[in-house]
Image (cartoon, rainbow, N blue to C red; front, side):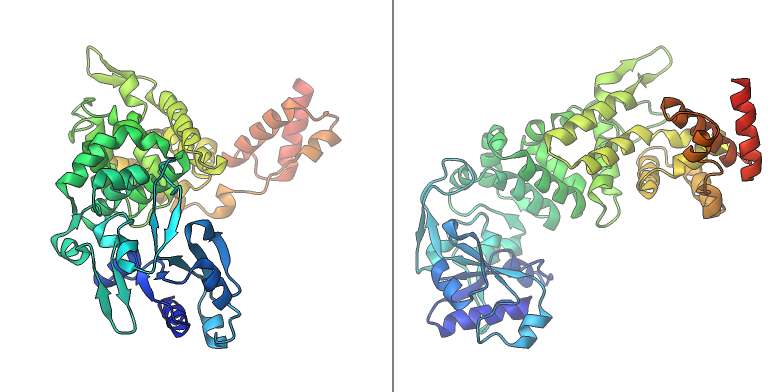
Length: 450
């Protein structure tokens, strides 16, 4: 992608326009990181870009942004360039934004020929640099390189103005600070605290995307502690903020309160976890604060799993998760305590338990839960060993009887079908029925008696 971005820059310059790499890719290159994508900033207008690269996508042309795919049909694009690069380059025209009534999009876009004027509208100094990749020359009008060296997240210009333009930038400041392990500039930090209640102007989907990145990019617990310190946590996830100070029984949770325990889980997340596992770790004990009580024997959280499932589902609906992701996150919350019963489970119950969708995530969450509290992995080791010693055909055997068999025996389809087939599968999973003949004979006997 870098080579294709340079090709676009070279082509734009051949047509008389200024063009540079811009934004996060410049930051990452200076940090010797591989950029996830490459953006180009240019003096060419969207119409001029689309004339040079006819196969473009004007997804944000009203804001000066077009996407150039790697299969551009511009005559000067070589077949090698077309075939080798898979992706698109965002090409944005130098501009100044007048105002942001909706807290996200500029009311008016004014194009400019000045890269220095363009960077003044960007969010943070470390994202406000441009790079001439041909001459290897850095354009830094906002002190971004200095802040990179100082490991500092600083808003460009007036931080309250920057955040008023797009409230999501407050969450992005937290994410960048956590991801790079940087501090947030004091004036920028205070501006976030002051404007935190305005975060509700940002759509839930955009908030969800930012939170998911915080959970999966590494340094998740630092991100959530910063959300708390900047007063954003109480706005976007008050259920997590409510965990602070909620004590737990020390014999099971020597690490501290529910918030401390949850942050330890986030610390122990594997690299690049799935979004569902990360959210499951965040929400697994969300039902504890409303069920906290001090009993004569110890602190208790009666029914916290059932309460937590309902809360997790509501949070997922609030953030517009897909139905599949909502189902999996709620299942992780619902089943995270069941491992303690694994040694006493009937064979049929155990096999159904480990056959749950994405069971590896349930197993991973249980391990995280243990490592972040008492440290006892005996149930985890038991389940893993039993699964390893169980052939697939034993865990998921082909059914001995089907609905067609029930119909052949004179039963009409209905609610009893599921009950009978489930009972027959239990007997099969527990080894009480091993052949189809045995199963049919057992079924006939049951139907005769009932």
